[in-house]
Image 1 (spheres, rainbow, N blue to C red):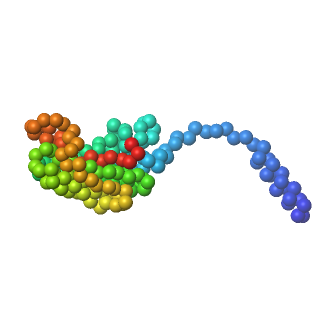
Image 2: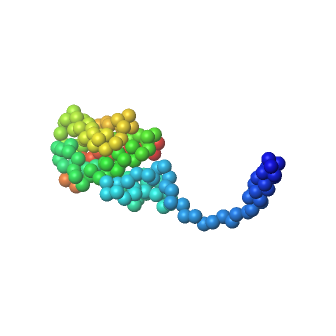
Length: 172
């Protein structure tokens, strides 16, 4: 009886092994590890299928890297909160990613005042990011004050471009 059962099992296994299967077309719905983040509205932030990394995809909110402020203010405006939260979610989902937040000011005010204001701007973005899931160890906030202007000039147009916090990823 044992010999007959063994022969039967071997016959079945060899019959299964000799069958060939044709590959089938299967849609790949998996996303890469770097594109598993979602924006504040719940939409995907980026996709590997587009050929862009989500941080560089022009269709992704993550490609936006600056938060702008009103004069003499370090409060993150409501219009920039989804941007900051999206970057925080990216950091949360990518624990090896790190950012430097650079707080900037226009050239009005003393050097010392502008350095302090730039630091408050960078720290404000950092606080929102950590409250939104990013780890403190992933974020460094620094002030550049008025030392790195984006626009030259002494009018509101130039000043408004310079009042910002830039989000820079290490390794880019």
